[in-house]
Image (tube, rainbow over all chains, first blue to last red; front, side):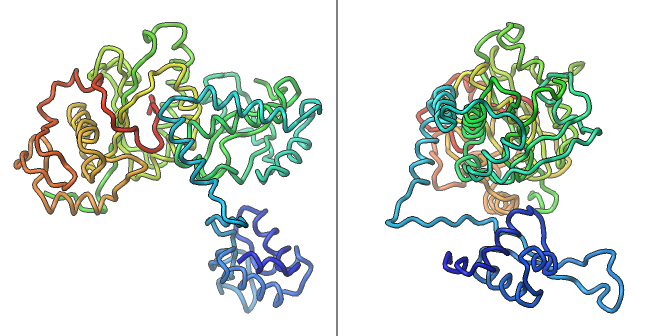
Length: 232
Length: 212
């Protein structure tokens, strides 16, 4: 399975598709990896056979000429998790059991305190995170797959759900495509998402110019990172 | 009478015991979030209905399960729709802070069950489902996110055995092998249910989604 990723071209293709967070066509992937379309197609299909990518077909709009209307093959990262551990370890079961016990005992506050301390110790002697770009680097290094979401003005009122009521137009925020704690977060969302927020607060620092806050939406990490001068 | 699979909606009830009176300043942050989160629920994909007290914006004034127990009863098109609202919307922030406002429940305080589309569950019916879950564990009649049944499984279950629902015939025959034959949750006084304790662990992604 993981050996499939040893080939450098294949690995570049996988990383590119994974980073987009959407369906990627063969042409686009080939261009990104700097290889010919046929070679990219071969590797993309091998990655799909290995279960690392999922493929589908999509009629790309706006096409013209002889190929118009023919569905194009598109790829996304497989949703299933892969992990390798040698020798065999089972931290996931341990995490699920600990989370279950913490949930039943109502240990949210203690867990969040531990997570905040861990975040702070990961940051070490460094100053609080200075801007969104630095936040992106920190988050990427921890596997969150951050991406910048530009401010949109129309807002949908998402940020107002916290009851702050002072939110005007929305500024750029950093969102994260990957939840590093996915399996346990799905089973105990309030507990584990709260832990995640506290960890990120510690990691980014609460006294600096950026802030992490809850803004959950389907398919992504529950936290967004924004500048404090966002107007609320 | 069986609900056909394509016309089933998911009902959910959860109960939450307040740590302080509703008008206590310590509860104020929760109260402030009610309107925005409830509006978000009303506009959420797959939202069908939620219980609202007559003349009020929500159901927090209704206390059918005890003086200090607020209830939240709603209907959704699918389990995924309810999940996404409960845990992937602004509602998650309420859930995250639940320990500031609500007692930790030892027993189940969230119950899900399938209903025919168009049916609006009553509070009594909802509390019966919670009792069923507490007494017998998860079944197609009453389950949780972590122990979910599909609408098809629930319909099959209802077809196989007479329903245990109040108002339907055949109340005494218990369908599930796991069920204790002695218990008849529909006869328990409502007041008792919210306070009774059991050793049964809370199941799955629990918490007090106290608004919807």
